[in-house]
Length: 167
Image 1 (cartoon, rainbow, N blue to C red):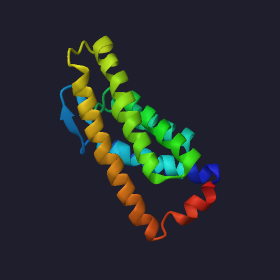
Image 2: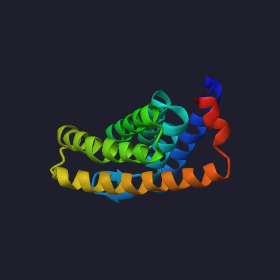
Image 3: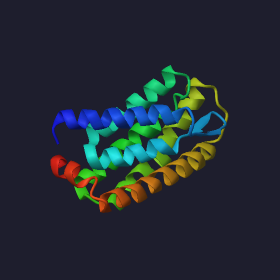
Image 4: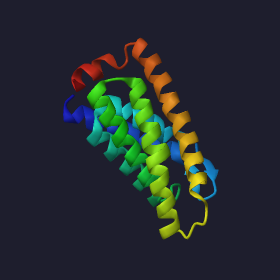
């Protein structure tokens, strides 16, 4: 896919992530569980590759933080999940494995790092298990929605042209 197409699709994903970030999240203590971010991570992983998937996650987190609807904890989860999901898809081209990459990357690795960040920078005393449960739940729901959405839109032929350009 040409860079202009990737940048355009990234812009759409980033706008969607920022806009929905102010209305579609589940507050759990200092954590804002954001399932739409996981949908965007999985779709970015499949359609755009690792660089754009991570850049999208970073920019969504950054803009959400600047506008006051995000938290610092969005960075590790979203970026690690996007990178692992995209790297898995790049290697194996399996949507199910991409789902697992997002779920493990955000739900486990991102949660552990976010827990450590919360303790160091936010003075949180919440146990790591709270972070693991909320990140795992949010990424499970969001990545699951992404797989279903991707399957439905692929059957409709929406992604075939994009995927051809990306390979």
